[in-house]
Length: 149
Length: 82
Image (tube, rainbow over all chains, first blue to last red; front, side, top):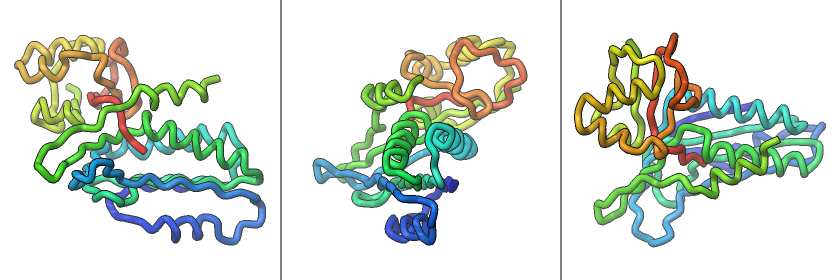
């Protein structure tokens, strides 16, 4: 299991090929990469703040929960912080399992929990100088209820 | 004495990322009441607790939670990771 919280960029292709490389006991690898979106074409950058220490612990707890629920050969979470330009990678999740259902479900679970339970906050800086914190969406919180048991 | 930390717009409204606070409060809500009574910027930041989350020693908690033995209290808006 790998958890990385970093300012540096990363290459999703390299990360994924390293993650999937030379495994004989799996039949499925699923990955998701989150990218800074600029719907209106006015975004200069996004700045991601986090809570050092708690961030790593919270992500590790989410990863532990995923590995308890699904039979995973491995899983990986990378999440960046600091200033990010439109089109930059924000984060990545990868799961490896014997079968695809576990790999897909665990990846979705990780994404849903990272959205609402890992201490990151996004602030958008527009090119005209205006700024605003990104609000949490009720949908993101609702997404967690499908995993409750 | 507890270390109180603020993140995102809570940090911006209060104007500091962290501070040491002498408190006699026994719960998070009691600490919030003490902070609110200090200065308007605190009252403003803590105006609507439903818009805030709290972590005690880096674990998500709630405003009714006891403060006994807690070293680090963090206040922040709902998280927006991913």
